[in-house]
Length: 84
Image (tube, rainbow, N blue to C red; front, side, top):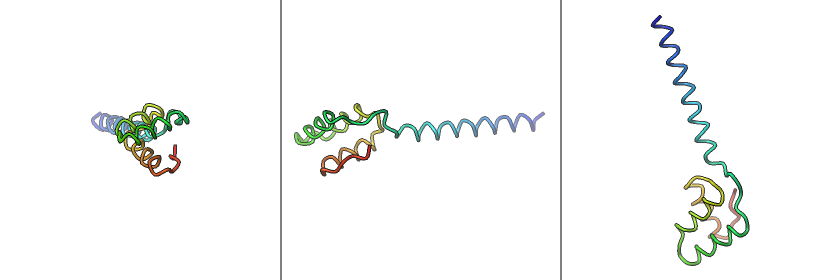
């Protein structure tokens, strides 16, 4: 009986860990891409020296995580196309 309980608990933990890894992986996928208008707003915020606002605009537009949005804004600031 103890053996069955241990097996069930281990399987439950494996399933939980697997679903958490999938959720983390999917969090980095954009829900949509940034429009030209969104990128223009990001460029305006960068030009005004408001990089944090630019990252927020980009995150709101795409739904990606903070680090990916920061990296995309950095690419926009360097006049590179964001990889989204």
